[in-house]
Image (cartoon, rainbow, N blue to C red):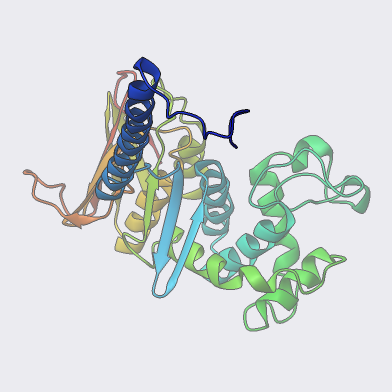
Length: 311
């Protein structure tokens, strides 16, 4: 716009006219530096991805089936299966019981449920399953389930979902079907039919273990089949039958929720707990290896005690 005398305004002169281009260049340089730094950090993250250790869990793999559960769930599964072994029932019974507990409680010993249902199988005191205190005992609850199971006419050959429903009489009659394959894989591992099919990771195991369930597994479920002898942090399992030996090993590992097992060596194979990875079974290289029919467990934080046998 011209001045009052008709002449255009004069171009700016002096210090301000010099600083303006410099300030503009400075802003551009700062923006470019920020962008370069951001790109560098992004590329660095791509080259060095953050590795997140897996969650505490137990995993069973049998053929194409892989099933993951928490250490607490694995512990209750060990009770359900050990009770079936105690009763001399085939692995199919354990499969049916596990599928039922997976559906009814998610393999958790719940103190609540629909109406007065409680426990692993959500059994109801009002329906004659026992008192609340009895049903909350996983051994009792499992035993009552098997008592009813063996009364179902075709339980050894019939459809697992339908057999489970005959016992439970659930309001969701087809609910057990989705758990069948996982239950069969877990039962196969815990009954010893699938050696080395189970692995566990538990960083939260107590330093001073109170191995209640593992003691019950040997003193009740595996009585007459396998024995557990403890001396400090070295525990020895003995069984005459290879299947019973692997059942004892896998049932023991399934109690990692309360028994901080550090390693297992059995039948030329070894398992070593790894706090950063889910451990895999491998060929044993340590010497000496356990004698035939025996397995050696190391339990971290175990309180030294005289040798004792649960048989």
